[in-house]
Length: 615
Image (cartoon, rainbow, N blue to C red; front, side, top):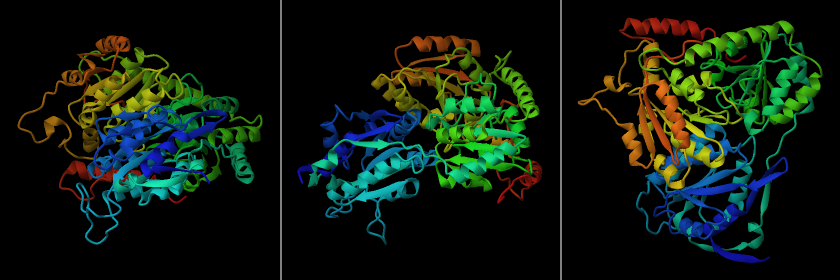
């Protein structure tokens, strides 16, 4: 057996550079690059190794560890999980800064390889700078925080351990069911230790993104229930996009006359022009999709984990005869809500169901009802997004202005606050992948870093980041990174002077405005932040506009700009789209001195009686 002597870090980098992925005959490098912020835990080992592979495995520098992991995750999502990135940090705070991003990737089922530096395996210099010491367990390090938010976790204590750890990591990252973050903790002394590795270990390896076909009996069971349905609906989840099943879904819905609703992750699978597209579903759903969902006797949930925003906290599907078919690659998801499991790839499953249904179509009365509620929702949408006559605009009115100045190929990126709800209802996607929302973890600070990752994955499309002032202030450093890398973003910053979304929720649950909007927080001086000036200080083009017509003109200027542009507009923190939406289970105090809270509790208890759990 031929061997080559390399350090552990050199072996990791060489192995990553040799991995390739293939789906439907299309082959690409599995790793598009490595994000790195160097420190004493990785600069000497992994840093030196990455220096020599820049031509085949580029290294990107960020300004914040959590942000760079967000960029890597967003890249993988925009690439439909066909490509991914790795992230490396030093030990201590550099590593734990990525834990939030790891949790995000875990919830959203997205691949990212995290390579945090770790303590010395030999323990000679213990305790080293930034080392976390456990009084009762000598094996613990700060990186153990990654264990519950990793699909696969390993700590490399000897250089030869990567021979088994790396292939296991790849199998998780490329599996449609297991997919999620992988953490390999690289002890800083072991990174620099040499070993005689088999040369064959570094040969090009092809990983296939398998399309799992449905089980014959599960398929027959699912098809039989659909054929008996009088009021069927489809929920399109993120799995539809990851499977590249958008055309299959469009043709299937059209042929069989089944209305389609969309989750946050599944939105943009269908064009808004498709006659069966009823829009968003659930807590942030359209009136059309939610009206149909409450009557549906059959729910075909494709590629969704059916979280509470989708199901109205398990109160949305009210038909006592309703059945849920869970078409999903992951058995864990296919068994949810007492559903009928159909474990398979989305595109393969849609094709198999289509074949089993033959010429069957939903009853004409149900199709007619769907067309009517869709027409009603279109009028409500137009009213919610029209330019305001006076006063500060709502989020929905800003969304309308951005769309009027937009192109079908635009990609909108967002993650947290009130905007995801308004975007889920109101954004009209012109092309698949045109709606990129991180709403599984709803992580504040994802927006700009995520936009950078999306732009790197799809450089031919304009990326429009929509972000509130609260989230902007949490993480904006990657504006500088986008300028530095020449990855142009258009950022629309909606300034409602605080956390407007949570202030509305606070009041809806009987509370008084407290500690959310800046004016209601403890302060000696009410801040007046010049966001445009701040963005310009990081190298971006920036301006502030006073109304939606100025915003539309500014959007056109931003498209022509040569680098990242920020447009700031003040918005009303209290206005929100009244049409659509559904109840969400947010617990209200059972005991309170305040009458408003007691009234909210009474309404809450009444709503919980509609929840269907254990069926």
